[in-house]
Amino acid sequence: MADARRKGRIMAMQVLFEVDTAGHEAGSTVDRVLAEGAMSEVGKAQVRELVEGVSKNRDRLDEIIHQHAPTWPVDQLSAVDRNILRIAIFEILFNNKTPSKAAINEAVELAKLFGSESIHRFINGVLGSIMGAINTEQQTPFPGR
Image (cartoon, rainbow, N blue to C red; front, side, top):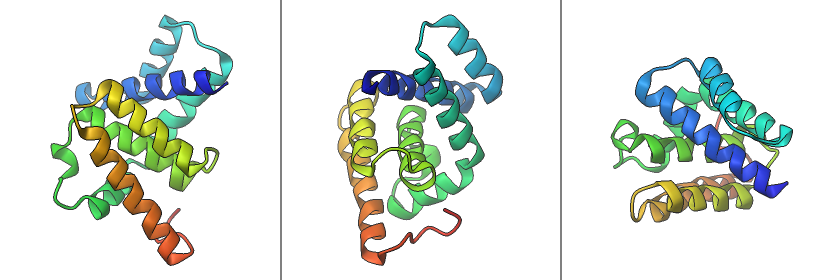
């Protein structure tokens, strides 16, 4: 099951990359990508849930990235790195189906596979900062969560 969820995250990242860079519509891109590849129902559900959730909350996710990485403008991050962060933050703050540590670990692994050379450290740092803010506040410091 964990393998299906990882494949789902990878495919969701690929869909979000295409939506981000080519301006394609998320729903039709998901449908096309899922039709092209063999994937379990768990993986397909994961892709749809992540793409829909990130797309719906994209502006808020980008604000959170900006709050925790102010010297790295979101639009200057690579599309891969930006979407890895969006997926992880969505899973941690909005979705609550994946334990935070697992979402962070998965994001770091995706960054190692698809991101630039040392981006996994940056992603780990941003997500660690978000977790620190949550732990410091003893509640979510992110309105609208």
